[in-house]
Length: 131
Image (tube, rainbow, N blue to C red):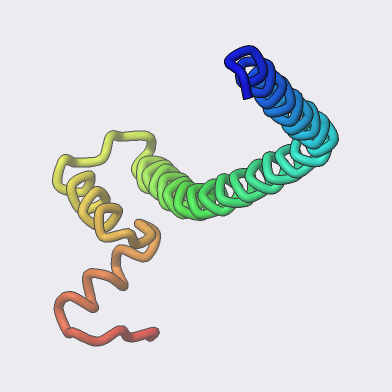
């Protein structure tokens, strides 16, 4: 085999190898393009599932916050109503600082101010009486 033949054989081998590599690349690109819509669809489904889970978590947190706020608002309204009733029973005179402090102490305990006499009795006796 002469040098020319060897060179031609090497060029032919290189050309065949390059053709095989080009064919492999074309197949890989074609497969990638064929899979792309499915991948995007799966990605969209995962995005929707994540969004749904995030909304559910947010809803649960909001539900807890509403329950907490509802209880606080109930206590505030009760305290306002009781303060109004006390002032009304005194011909619209202001409450004393001691009474207000008592109201605030009961409020801080998370109890209704309208039940302050019950709370005071429980503190004194250690038991709740309904009489």
